Length: 564
Image (spheres, rainbow, N blue to C red):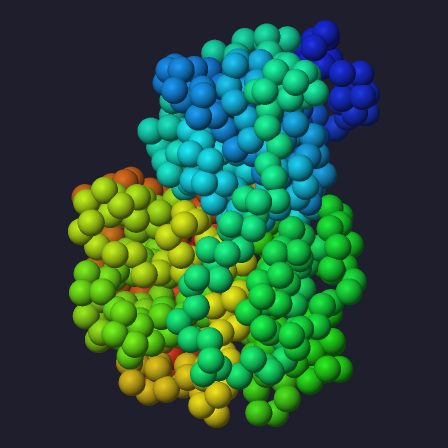
């Protein structure tokens, strides 16, 4: 159906509330905005739903979320009574409409006779994963748009293992969503009535305490570390404030300073705008406080507290941003080397990283006799082998991470976890501090031993229909015309994860390897209107590695500029 007809149908639909219709009437004459809201439904995939808030089929609202949940409810019904009885765990972050979407989901699921466990205040995403596993739920829902701007929200679905769903579930749920003909067909049972009937169960503090206690079982060292290390922490007005601070306190890290302007939940993120701690700009207020108090480390977690970012004070007193590749490799090295030193490193130990993450951890793992596996982007793909190893016992999971500042040092959460990661980073820094080293010193030692691994990421935002089409054209240009020579690097191998037999599920990712061990990858984001170029170099020193990265960036920029 033409987008104009869908727009008019919404205006005439008796199931749509008057406020939404008023919002749409105000768009009269703005054809581009109407088209963007109605040209296609908001897609449901392995990342669930994510989009801008607002009225329309291509927006996050009570109707699109309601249809998604109705589809999920019908899918669970198709799995039998046991799935309904095991039920669904629900949590939400600080964003606009997060709580409303959570309550809506609980009411829809309850109307289908599906048991619901729901958190009653905003919580970190990893706690949702933990909750699914702890309650033995059949599925989970996390209402969050992670680190997207304030205009966005999202709806992530988890399976009974506590990891985000893979293609099999996503396709089945999407098929059920497609059968929701009218918004008026979506069933709802009033929240209080659902509680009275025992279908909606609010989660107690006891479960959160269990999560805290399980994290406190993770430390490798406790007595031989310098807990006086001075830390500045910012939740970026998100969901991490209570639990991250609680973990620091429980571990005895008492020299903690909170960025007050970013302490409490704020769905508008008024102190930062774009609440993504991958961007060093997110540390502006933290750096200011860090200078005032003489901090050693600056921590920031994103709005749903599954990602954790770090800055480290250098000898000159300035703060140096450590990207996800650096932090991830350091955590992995600390876990592997110190578990070996304590005699607790298993013979079948394994670590996991995504295909667009750097290779330093792989080099470290090989040196210690630990297997390192590569998986597709997205923590669901890191969790999938761990779920298999639970059954087969073939490998023992030690740690997994992605370059996008997502880390998980535990097996009781099957997603990235900023709460446990923040604790592990603090412990690691305090351990090396007791030896007279900073994390900068440790990283330099790793470069000296394994080679100077360096990286650069470039993200290009291309919104709307035209942007999506241009992203497709850019990908096809790279496919058709690989860059055979860049500076003094010669192309050695190409992997097309969409068309080649890689042993992994198909994915629209291209990866180009050069004869010196450097490489770059290009992929469209699965959750944002972006196309990303991941550049990795191995150099003799910093200058050599930077030279190679600049050559990669210039060459790929030229291709982008050539595509109209």
